[in-house]
Length: 181
Image (cartoon, rainbow, N blue to C red; front, side, top):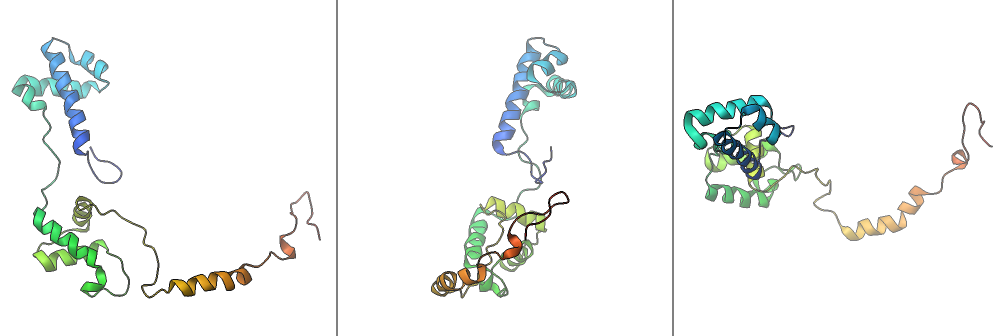
């Protein structure tokens, strides 16, 4: 089953679904027909009949979860940890100094430089998720920003820039009620 974010079920979700299938197997052993199983477990009859066919063919083991879908990650755990450490150094350490954001393309390039492993942007997204990174809206903040200068500007200049609304902000205007002058 696919979801809007492009992922599948988590390990917990797979375990829950497997428990439902095993419960169906127990009902089949007691002689409950697929429509009854579907009604009790709140699944479609189609699934109940498919589970019955698999259970008859290979027993309870046929209803076990097959694990996560897709191909396994090409990077081992030690390589993933090395990549995580390099990502912490930031993009500027690898020549991307125009901004301080890791894009999927940049991470794919770094992965290729370090391990010779090419990945699609979607594969990089899965890899970053595995490393505990999530997509973020970047904080647009200059690397050279001086906090004291910013604080001084806020106290001295911002009140002048913001100011009070002019005469145009007084009152309301509509077709039935003319504006006050």
